[in-house]
Length: 143
Length: 112
Image 1 (tube, rainbow over the protein chains, first blue to last red):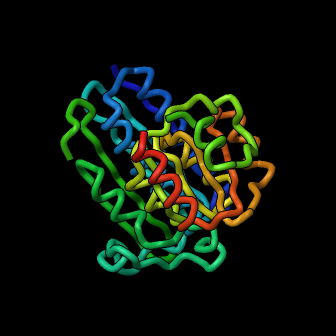
Image 2: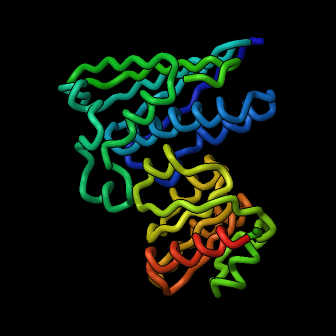
């Protein structure tokens, strides 16, 4: 079994935020993946998806699934992250006041991803964009 | 305890998602920070919040929450209600604030 999917994300489009996460959740459910593992995938993917909506101009989500791993790559065109270490700290956020008013931008997204992923790599080029690579083992509920 | 039971006992307004009134509530979570709920709410929890926009439903659905309870007399947006109907996750309302509603919900779930 190997499957791959791609989703486009528009910056600022909060109306559709969560679409990719919802599609991937449905698919994993159909495949009979353990609900604890699905939860971890959904937390990672949703947070990463919202980050593109909240911070970038546009982005592409690629999801690759094989028998034992889900690999998610989220590449955006956007301002990038100057200091990744700082961005990874709980509570740090550069979100706009409008985004914060909606209850986003609390500086919890990247730490949430980090806590739920088996493998998580961020690369970023300021002024160009950010890429997140997230992998989760499908056969083990352990973090 | 089902959603319909807390609607009756806490005198909540049912805005949308009537189809999900039979869902079982296994706990509660009170927060207005979406990532907090995403990261920490348990499946089956009723989410108590003052947030009313559509993204609330995305979180509720993705995390398999049993219901959303909007406090302080706020009302959900039309697109929030539309998605609630689509997902079958009820959006409820109360004039009580988050503290008051959470306290009553907690007692109710505990006494069962």
